[in-house]
Length: 264
Ligand code: FPP
Image (tube, rainbow, N blue to C red; front, top):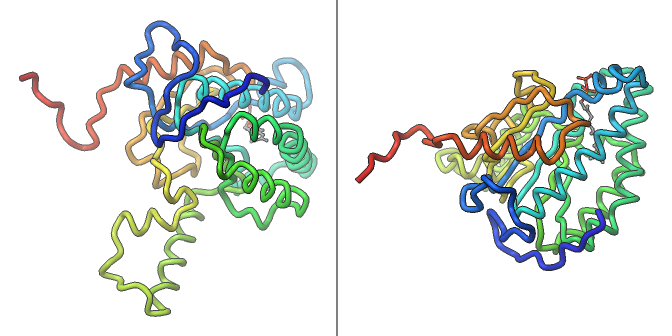
């Protein structure tokens, strides 16, 4: 990340874009929040006869590229699935590589994130992560909290079902203490106990590598998201692939369970 994003304005939802949008994209109909399942790193490496971890390393470059483009085009938030609660089942060497990669990338990029007004947050059960990574996460979160640019959520040791159970437990504890009337629990109360509390739900979910699954990602928050599934492997996800996803999004009629409005 090298170009300055210092002109970012502090508004929720979409922010004014700082760079011209590619032709064909309508600034008024961009998603305010994009979520990505970054799949296909291992296959990308396998196709090149490289170790799987090289795919993850290249995946970081794709993530930085995507963050820069979303920020430049005024998209308000990007949420990336970096490590799921199930990913601990991968070979120990790969898990260790990923944890070290997260640490290195965070340490290396923090200054740029600060300067470029990115607000980074990590969503998930962070206390199970290595101590050093937890400290870096805390530092990065604190140092970028007052920034005014794109929100960048990195889901790390994240599981959608676990997040829902956690929210239910937090509400139950409030009821037990006598601080909450069960009758007062509505969707808003429930959402306030999720890791994404205070943030708008994703409008668009992109999944790379052709798999057609949600994989325990943002189960509550994706209720009305439009899905874009591409065969592109995550390390190859570039500007053209992001434009294709945004064009696909703009071609959809979003009804949120209602009906199309009739022409007057
Ligand atoms: C899925 O591909 C990808 C991951 C489990 C890791 C994604 C992590 C990154 C791109 C690094 C992000 C870094 C930071 C600092 C946020 P896969 O291994 O499942 O690929 P495959 O399905 O082809 O095997």
